[in-house]
Image (cartoon, one colour):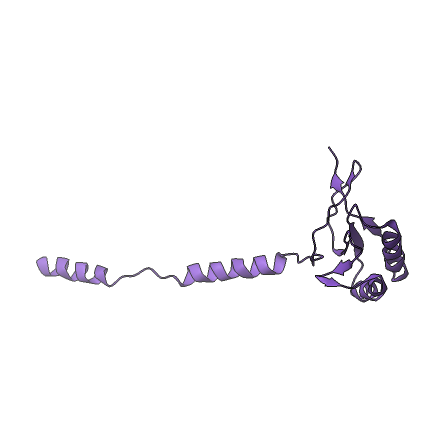
Length: 136
């Protein structure tokens, strides 16, 4: 009797938990989150957006262009200027239909804003929006 008990206890010492299924599940979840993540290219600068009562949240692929208070036109962290807006937007629109959103600082010149809107429309953008903050 005692020898059977000793054999059983020794056999139980060698048992371990198999972590392979757990690792498989973790990797599958990781792949799922990587594939389902939406990557949005930010403008690279912080602007002080004007407030608007009628502002709404857009839930689609966007091309974000920023206009700073000192007149710089930024896309993806680089200064493209007004001259580079049309080529940048047309290149990005060749892949798929996207909305152009302009994040203009409230102290930016209206002339530059109009030039960026015109260049975006000349590049083929069907919809050009201005980013604002919700007014209280």
